[in-house]
Image (cartoon, rainbow, N blue to C red):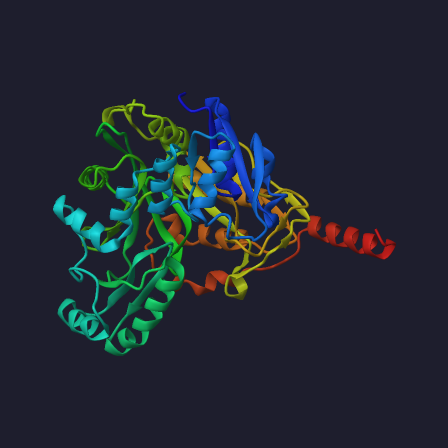
Length: 473
């Protein structure tokens, strides 16, 4: 391994995940943390850890500060994880200027694919189908109204630099388009620092299918098959599955080749994800490319046996891709459940606080990537995801049964989580029949009517807490 020391420019479970990969590769890992994160698990798992800021966010979001820390601590590489600065072209550029290897694509590729209109143009040039939409960014609301009339309602109004489900609104008519135009611009400006927006035809209740790719700096590209991310709420993914139980082998080969063409078209290197919408008539449309590791990379690892984080680091170190497409196969099905500290019965309101007791799921085919432990205080400044439960099985029915068992095994006390809601989804006949799309959650509000019966363990915890309080402990 060419790298000696790597700075992890992130926090939470992905930082823990990267530290583990570094350990296996013989690379020393360096964690950074804010004051709010000083007791976080990634701080404990890395070989070295340094406070980057008192403020909960500013340190993680300052590319100059992050690269300075890498240089000061003697790191020759930097991994951005996902979120925060992971798709920030400036961070990649600064790394190049300071002689620190960026574990990800070039600044040019990040900028090209991070701009949604440029990404669409890249896909079109590569012969990849895209949804009908504006040729470029919209000039003003009147331009939006005119082009929506040409495209036909409903339309999606999207931030050009958007991502993660933010800066996007569906508009079913001109009135809604006019109402949402300024809102999307405001949200885009605050979240992404850009007021540019564009329009796309709204594909109603599609399936959301994404393809994982790996590419090296010598022009070699492979895909690692697809993931089905259709179970989502307000454009935020909840459950992801690999491979999609809704695709035929011919569709799987077709969409994999489309993803490779997108990557080749922008000179991409490292790990990335090409996202598509699958319409009811079987048509695939390019949506966007994520120029980083995805939260749900775990399930691709489970079905292919390929460690994507280690692959990222090896590619960034200059290695030629050691995999050919014909060498890559998948086995069984895997599902990832985003265990969020939220109360689904209360509008998915965040439920931050202290983890009074935590039991991780285990057994055959079960993996948990987490950043929590008993006694850990989930800070209110970050995303509400506190763990990822990943389940693998050879067949779809077995995956459902094993997932229900694993979710039942996992117990988190002190905060509310999405675990009971996922149990409801697993019990729905459409999900069990592998027949669902992005409208599944909205169409099934009754799934929120689950019982909140307290488990015996939580009763014991409450009694112990009351005794301790009474005793002044």
